[in-house]
Image (cartoon, rainbow, N blue to C red):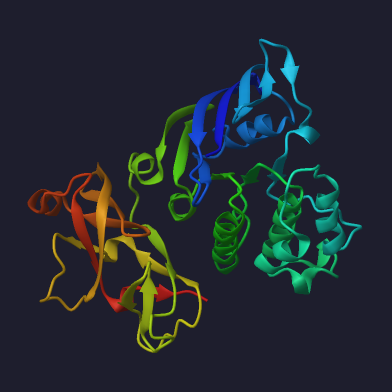
Length: 354
C-alpha cells in the first residue's frame, strides 16, 4: 500500500495561505483519492507542491518512505526525480510532436523502474487511432487521454490529475471518467485527482481530502466525507453498467454483477455509464414485492446527511449510490451508518448514456 504524507505551508498571495496537512493510504485494488473543495481552496496548489513546481515555503512531503521535501532538513528532491506524473487541465502536450512522439517522450523520462509497455498503454487508452495526429487536431477528451498516457509511460509511482475532466462536455466527461477508472484498475498506479464535483469523486475515489480556504479540513472514505455540507437538489448517480450474465438483451443490464432493468429498448452490449437521479432512488430494509419499481440493489449505508427537508443517504451497493429521503422515512426505516438497505428504482429512471 502506497502512502502520501503532506504537510505544506505556502503564502501564495497576500490573501491566500496554503496550510494543508493530511495523509492518504491508497488502496491496492483501486488506488484513487481526491482533493475536493470549491474553486480557489488550494487543491491545485497542493498538487503543485507534491510535484515540486514549486516547493512549499515550509513543511514535509513524502511518498512511502521517500521524502520529497523537508524544510527542516533543507532537502528537496528535484521535480524530475520525484517519479510523479502530473497531468494539468490542458494536458500541456508538445504542439510540434505527434501524439505518438508525445507518448514516447514520456518513456524517455523513466529510469530503471518498471513501467507499462507502450503497446499496453495505447491499448488501454484506445489511443491507436490518435498516434499519427497532432495535438491541435485532438478534442479535449483526446488530449487528456494522450497526456495521461504520456504520464503513465514515464513510470510514475503517483499520478497527479488536476481537474482532468472539468473542461469537457458531458459525453466526453463520462468517457474520460471511464478511462481514468480503467487506468486505475489496469495499472494500479496511485492517483490523486482534483475535483469540485461530488458525482465525479463518488464515482472514482476511495479516499477524499476535503479542503476549505487552503486547509485540509477532513480526510476519510469518500461517502463519509461527502456526506457533509449543504444539499442543493437532486444529484446524478453515475453507475457503471455491464451486459447481463446471459449476454446483451433489450432492457437488461448488470450493476456490480446484479441484473437490473433499463429503459425499454436499450441494449447494453459492453461497459457503459448510466445516470440515476438521487431523487429517483427509494430505500427499503428488504426487497419490495408490491412496487412497480423492481430494480433492487442491496447495500450498506455509509453516511446520512440532513439539510432542510431532504436527507441524503450514501450507500455502498457495489457502487456508490445516493438516495434522497424525508426525515420521516429515515426515522421510520431506522436508517443509520452501517444499516443494511436495498436501493429501489424504476427502469425508466436509469438512463443509459451514449
